[in-house]
Image (cartoon, rainbow, N blue to C red; front, side):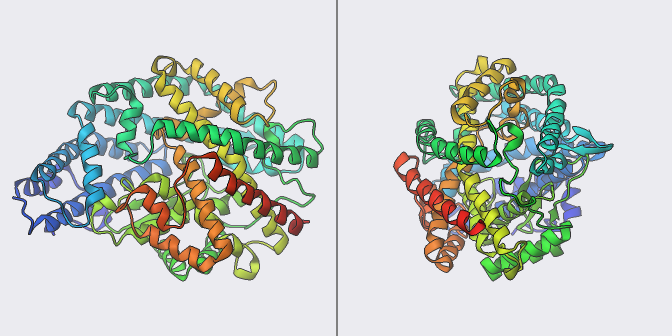
Length: 572
């Protein structure tokens, strides 16, 4: 291994380009042979882990403290002064390895991904990639600063979310409208940012010599196993199979709530006569009970989560000047994951922590893979990474009750599980809406660069995939929902992964309904593969099929509706 590489976080954070450069030069000057190629790759992986950890820790800090100028300055310094030079040197190492013709043992997928990266690398894009990251930070800062005054208290949009579960419809409507009002006040700022995002991305694709930005992303995301046309096949399958099922769910909701139509503020409230689920009182309680659930799924998961608790790898509370959303990232050197979310005091928090926990266990399991290029979250296919998280939500479901150390009575657990299964069906059309929207944007870059045309297209696609929510008289609110969908802005073309993974996760769950222990065993084996095999092979290892067709989709939508009906009887 390369000597004297720091392993302590503070030392890694203090690294400058001058500290990295000698290691890159050493790797570049080495003569590659069949005898030393494995060690050379391990040395490169060790160096890549330091760069990855430095970036990740700085990024995490920008999301935890969006108003901290010093943190922003340190992050910008890294992406402006260290990362571009590192990317240039990494490109040289990729070219060196590819030119050698050597085939390191068990590195087939790593080489394939390296070829894809090398193929789209252009030095002219380095400044543009820096600019894109700065726009991402600006977007997060903008959303993180948005607050609502509610009964004399300043609240973030995340903190307002819990009010949508209130039984009093007037409270729900008022809170929803106040949150949307803030979004609409910020409309021009987000639209102006969008123009900048598009200008940067179109130039990146042009520099790479590609016909459009989607082609760039397809290579960047290593989408070897499916095409844009496959995505559109999946869009049609969702419209054919899932949208009617979602309509059935929303019609039941309308009837139970005694409404003429389901309005945006009616989507989350429990339709029973029971009070909203209140799973926990404190974040510490959320953490401890989640640990018990993870332990029930598999004792190793409980141990891994305890490690995260002990090492301060959880930031779950909601506060001002904290970026919205939730994520799991991996610190490259320790191979340990970090979970970020914004708690709201609702069952959604439980689901989010189970979801991000699945990502975290993926990191722990795949940490045994030796090479950075086959275990880093930058290289593991997102379509399967999301199976790790979504399947965990379902595998954990039997242990939500207090009997197992969880949060709920038997009846409350049935309500939570019912909402979850219904949520899978109703979420799939939204996931596909986001993906279809992004295909439209980048297939029509001139129109896609115009925020007003984007707003109109979003509304049109909303009516195609989400026709069961009544937005009459609220057209501006509907048109700007995409403003808060951070993936569209900061992670372009990231969303089809969730839909494909949800189908995979439901298949893992279907296996668990027959044999929970075997399903968990297959799940763990698949997680441990990292990205050493293809995407269809990862699905197969987990006991699932990688599919886009309506026939496969219908099998599992039928299963979901069947299980929903059973849970309705338990709940009642």
